[in-house]
Length: 300
Length: 85
Ligand SMILES: Cc1ncc(C[n+]2csc(CCOP(=O)(O)OP(=O)(O)O)c2C)c(N)n1
Ligand code: SF4
Ligand code: SF4
Ligand SMILES: [Mg+2]
Image (cartoon, rainbow over all chains, first blue to last red; front, side, top):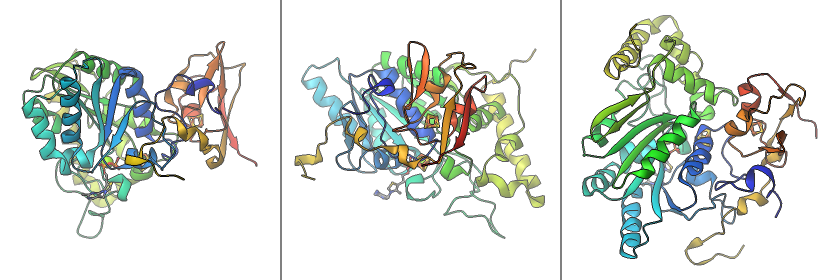
């Protein structure tokens, strides 16, 4: 077949998918599957990933993959895990790859049930901070003061006023044995976390920061650059929690101010105008709190 | 196209859809500068960089021209030029 050369010979997620140019989410999926290997069944709720990987008759997936509803990925995954267990097929594992809207908001009840029952599922949330597939509406994962189509900036609004939901902590509080955050800016670290999660049984959760050029407003070559800025200013902390305790963090070597991250994206551009300074101060405080909470900087 | 029961589709069939036609910028690798580090292959969201005997190539059938490979190349061995078709 055409295209079987080079990178597509071995890949489990091949070319021809219809993600936007420079999509951080598509890049994450390539690396997730490199880390899991072929013996997985992938479950994907509605969202960009589902849409760009499933025009009828054109599938980039080379592992079994199922799309269902927007809100029930954890329940579908639990059912598949139960069926595999009944068949004693312990070599095949179940992995959800779902967006932040489905994970933080609409599928949250089902996720809580999956975690509480202790089902053997690796749940990966690809976090692009909004409902991107439907035009960028606000979700529980949208960062504070980001402009969204449901919280547009105007005379009486500076974007989303609430904090981003701390979902990793909520997942860890269910007694989940492995919880981690990762970023496409650090692909080796991302793969290592997925590999580690695969060594555990029971529910596991990884939240990956996947910069989105179309929704965040940056040029298509910058997804990793933006990802690095987010991590190194403290707004996107990278850590692992095992059995409820923080066990490892990715240290910030050279701390950046949040403005370095914000000014690179049009979803935050209103904050850099004259009347934005007090909002910038608040965002700097959020970053500094993360740095203190997760000990992201080693004091010398 | 015939609809199968459950909408089941064979894996890897997206290779029939050539996203290279989306491209308006074309990455060109300068092999004299390239150190064969493989970062371009790592960062491509479209699986469009590959190596044969340590020589890196772009798969123009699928490359969308996003520029990530050029931006992340540590020795600036990849240049983006206007696509002319
Ligand atoms: C019950 C239901 N409500 C709304 C929708 C419309 N819908 C489809 S995708 C989507 C957004 C998905 O957002 P997210 O989960 O963050 O994934 P992303 O597209 O951002 O990767 C919405 C609202 C739907 N398909 N089903
Ligand atoms: S909208 Fe964002 S997440 Fe969705 S395909 Fe485009 S770049 Fe990727
Ligand atoms: S320009 Fe983008 S799509 Fe093309 S090879 Fe480089 S990273 Fe891949
Ligand atoms: Mg989203």
